[in-house]
Length: 263
Image: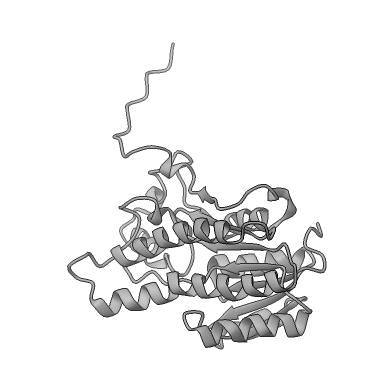
């Protein structure tokens, strides 16, 4: 498929997990991709993927965000799609264990970062009459409690509201802003969950709380992001697409025993 042929795409948090899978998907489908992360290690990985260039930038700072937007415009002649995916988990410390510094650090990346990216990309798109698409990575942790630490969950709830506000702000421009809300996905960020379950011999129980009874894969979230970025979702705006195997479709309830099979 070449549904993004010739499109200029910027993906943050591209070193691993969902961002890495998304970067590769867009490149496979013909996009010119600028991959963004804060570390240097991902550059060697991205360098061997046709259509992908890299830049190191701190997406929680306006100077880093502007640098990545400018690079995409300079190298690819514009910007059509922004995927604001970069994020940190902050671990599973509870409300009393987390510090003020923890909250500042987590929200700086997870919420201030998408705000700055939407602002900079949106300004370019408006000034150049680009009916672009912006997709942010939120989380089911932003929908209700129980899926992440306090600061992480609050930051993702903020992202969900941010895309709604941004969609309204861009009224009449043709720019669409949406979010994807992953459930439990096996990535570097969730590695401690998977490793802990395996160490206890409980790896078969990972993801058993959702109706599909499994964890998700980064490629599945990348496909959802690509849908929201593509013309196939041309009438989807200001929404948060939940991709969690059905986890959030119900309040927590005990599993009812299955009726015996008829003889």
